[in-house]
Image (tube, rainbow, N blue to C red; front, side, top):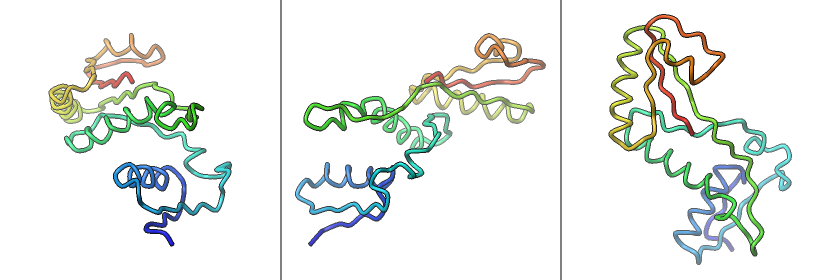
Length: 148
């Protein structure tokens, strides 16, 4: 008899199980996954990213939490001293505006994100080419960079 049965052991299923057990360790919980090797699972094959470039406080808070979890995953998911395995690389994100209206929105988002303590840089016009060498910077477009 289980208190909770989670269907699907991918990223969301495993995260749900982890957080439920962290909150209530006495739960009798089962995760049902049709591919226990995860060889063909979407989460294992994902090329997704984690960013903080949002314009709502809740999204930034959730993303920061994700960065903490992924950054400390090997220790957090260690079993009997054997580190958990996760191929997580911090490469950053670069957003580019094409219009003055988009640039203005970037300025507003940048102000909000820096007020929230995010490490975000606003790059104006030709200055963006020094960050991404293959980027051709013409005009007065704005760029926001989240370096991690």
